[in-house]
Amino acid sequence: MATRTASKNKDFVTIPRENYEEFLVWQKINSAKIFIPTAAEKRMLKKARENFAQGKYTSWNKVKHELGLGIRG
Image (tube, rainbow, N blue to C red; front, top):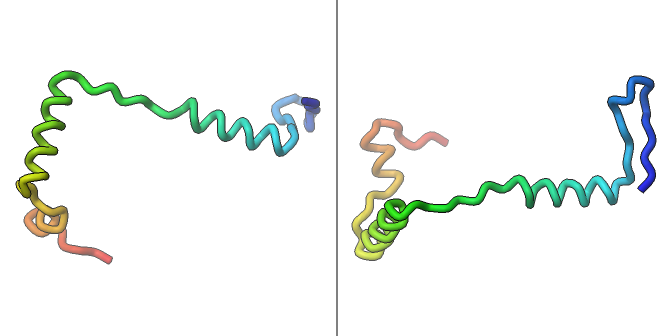
């Protein structure tokens, strides 16, 4: 991979587009945060899934209405 500097103070470098696109893919993959839940979070998630399956939940629109946010378009 050939690179060349485009300015005298060397703060700008050009690289081939293909290498830049590979870098963007690499950056996206490697910058993702991995969520590792604790035991308590796993229990809460299990309970939330059970509640949802049983229909024990409140819709987002109802929450917004109760908070007085209304629906803005």
